[in-house]
Length: 115
Image (cartoon, rainbow, N blue to C red; front, side, top):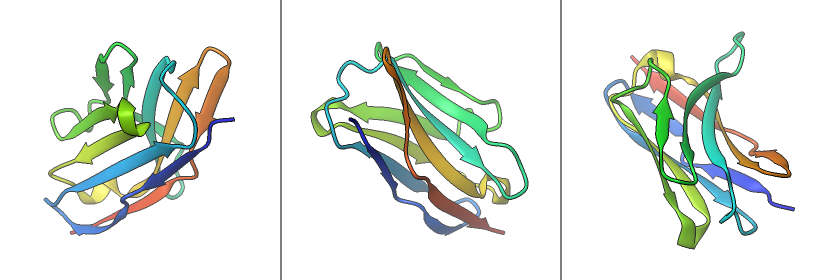
């Protein structure tokens, strides 16, 4: 069974950048969609963006133009490049990969943006 591990989170000042990684333990070449979500304290988990197996990306309006999703199939890894970070981007970030057989979530990585 595929397992996902996120990394790359941390503390950054507003305006800074971070790159999150989502590494899969197994082969995910047949994925349908790989997405990133986030959950801030006291709030529901929300969609950040995703990428289809065909390479089409989709982003939430709140991050459009600042965040970029990419994939490295050779490394079984998905990335979320976050630029121009704002304090309101502070949250635990999760990756999710969808297969025809179901979805798999990572454990999350904390991103904190200070003002």
